[in-house]
Length: 156
Image (cartoon, rainbow, N blue to C red; front, side, top):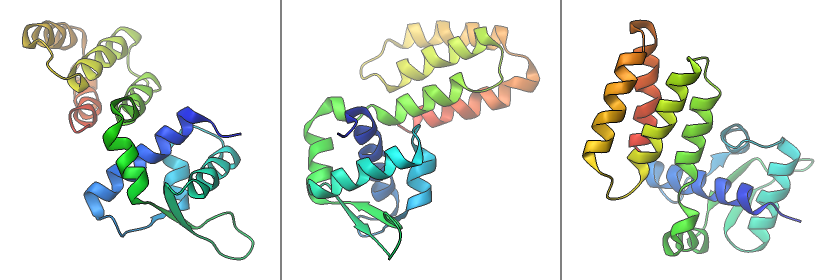
């Protein structure tokens, strides 16, 4: 049985990759496995399920589950037609912030800012207040890392 959340994450990662590198490019299997937050066997199983449904195409060699994968037109259409399918990159960014070694209060503020940055039609006053609080609580040493994590959220 496939994991719907993991399938969304796989499709979203491949969609973003195709947007940056071209739709005909295959992604090495290790990149997909590293990009999602799941055991490799579970990721492999879900990639194969998505391929059987026509959303992905894999390259396989003897003795492997798959060595490379790309998103196919039905997978792109699914992500483009269903708004709830696209928030996966921001969710990965927020998980990355949460797993960082920043101060817990700073991580919480960064997660709030990342969520607001990825929401459509956000109130700029609300963001200004969050940024002000973030800057007040962040040391100089952590500021560059915090801004780097936020930059990922902006590019969602």
